[in-house]
Amino acid sequence: MKSVTTNSFRVGDQLELEIEKLTFKGSGLGRTESKVIFVPYSAPLDQLLVEITEAKKNFYTAKIIKIIKPSPQRQDPPCELFYKCGGCNWQHLNYESQINAKELILDEILERQLKFDLKDLKNGILKPFLKNSKPFNYRNRIQVKSLKNHTGFFSKNTHEIIDMEKCLIAEESINLSYQKWKKLKKPDIELTKYQIKIVSNNDIENKLSLSKDNITIEKLNDIKSELIDSKSDQEAKSQSMLLGFSQVNNEQNKNLIDLVLTYYSKFNLPKVLDLYGGPANFSGPLALNYSNQLQAVCVELNFNSYSEGLKLKSEKKLTNLKMINADVESYLKRQLNLDQTFVILDPPREGLSSVTIHQLLNLKPTVIVYISCDPMTWARDVLKLKEHYQMDVVQGLDMFPQTDHFEIFSLWTKIDINLP
Ligand SMILES: C[S@@+](CC[C@H](N)C(=O)[O-])C[C@H]1O[C@@H](n2cnc3c(N)ncnc32)[C@H](O)[C@@H]1O
Image (cartoon, rainbow, N blue to C red; front, side, top):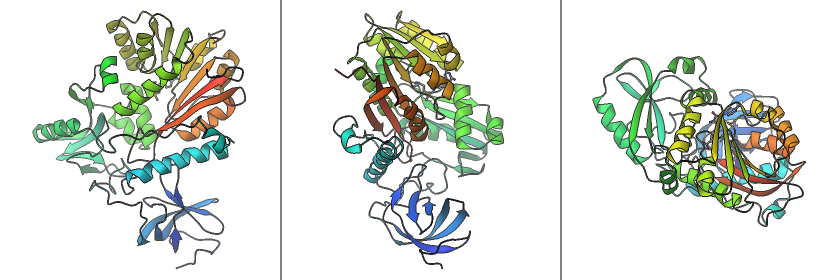
């Protein structure tokens, strides 16, 4: 075994390591003299024996061989499939430390990448991280794979199905329906994918009051494209293009909608532009709540999501909401200016293209709300906004407990305008 001060390690070398903190992408971080080491399934203050699995120019990755002294932040993962399943990566951490780690990751991005003074931000701009009231049973949809007598999730990084009785992060009603359905279903002769989802009929009142309707179990048929590229981001992207996007966590989605409504009311601008708007998740409630005072436009590329938005518009008679099925870049190309406009940006994980940022800066919207599920692309994009806009609000929300993922809500005003 090499000592921790040794300068270089090769794959297969073992060393003792203390974990300093958790990082974006979920691994714990320890240090050697020369490079950092990322260790999946570790916890801050763990003392570990680890084995190098990858030696890169600037960092190593390693796996745990033995926990010499466990961190006080550890817990026994409640799900027996945790280390096999590709879904969650933080069930070995108690919920408080998950939240602390997410807060720290956001703080570091704000300070190091965006060069904000954290002390200043903590005087009111950086709001307390919003926990989920239920660290488990929060997902309103799951996807399961089925082949012959096996039904469940793919095991981590493979296409082997691990049989699953219940998913601890799915809402209880999903698990109950899944169990009944699994008992009755005929074996699939081909690998088949099913989505099990709580359907709220896209009803704004339902969304806002968190009430639930039926469960649907839908057979999906894009399994081939998923097998070609098994990266989970690609998988999520192709699924969202096929099915249309919907937020997975009702409680945190309600919090996001509340934030949008609350901050809109501080400006009361006559125009709202909901870019990457999905089924008008934000512009729908805005159009409903401020029917006499604003005109909203929702721009969404996916036809299914756009159609959901149209359905909402007609059911709620939202004459002040216009749904547009278009690419954001080509929509912005046709605009002359965005003066007196409250723009909402909620792009996919890849964030905004440099063309879109350039277009926005030229069109000069009065207020920009940027919501993101990827702190890195958010930081990259807002660094460019920061030259012309000031950040008035930033808040993390725990949309995805038991994983390293989280959502960011941020509000930016043109440098000459201040929050009342
Ligand atoms: C993170 S989702 C947010 C959806 C919506 N705001 C919500 O809360 O439900 C991102 C959305 O952007 C859409 N999208 C992706 N690329 C786009 C583009 N170039 N132009 C317009 N919409 C796009 C996706 O279809 C998806 O609905």
